Image 1: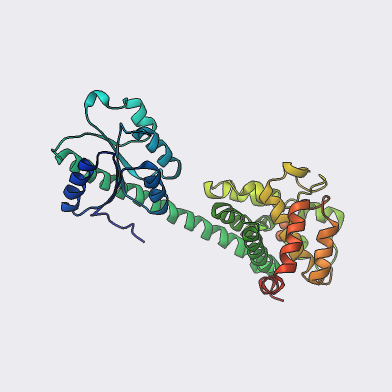
Image 2: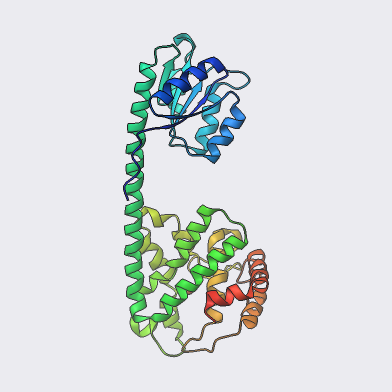
Length: 337
Ligand SMILES: [Fe+2]
Ligand SMILES: [Fe+2]
């Protein structure tokens, strides 16, 4: 997918000088740009949060808030927008240092000769096209890496069908739970990625142990216990997985410190790893395995309740029980029962 080419920029102007703003709007409209103007910074910032703009033109000296403060606030949520600061006289311009710190790309001294401003807008458009091209390339690379990790996971699944189905169910359960908890979109993306690949380390477990039909010996269980570390090591070579590796590595830790691999306790275990543990264990409990029968949902919930504060985070475990009880039909659908 190619990024959209910008020919006509979407521009927002903030200036307390209404006359200047009117003139600018007419000039920029003539060049085919879409312009929205504000005399008051608070509503301008609200608009920028709601709607995506390409370019922000902001007056430097204004009351009650100066342009550089406005830029500071805008940069908190929009790193991409191309910013042109304008001022009446050169002597009143902010220092180069301020401009660099706030990532202000251009400075325009107000006059009725707009050629320079038009030129800045053209460079802004070129700049944004490049930024969006790079962003798009990074997204493609991320997609390839996730696809590649799926191939790795499929090699486990080809031998061990359970891991494939289990990973899908745990992923859907985690996403449902994260939404139930009201977590933000980025956090939900992280848990989705971690849950999809949480058992990928099983690729490093010998077949005679991974596929054993029956109870594992202590020694074999020690080998199985390596899978969170193997998984984190495999995925940790790529930047996009690096941030979710502590979740993958921590998905068999227990609140009481008796888990593995690092015997972390309580809050030492990353929050999303604690969330993943509840969903992962619940799915394992209610699944039929060669060495055990499937438990019912009610029995599964009871085991979660019994593990509160020992195996599971008390608050997350309680919320999970609440979620399943309140949304039984959806949960059954996720679990395919
Ligand atoms: Fe696991
Ligand atoms: Fe698992």
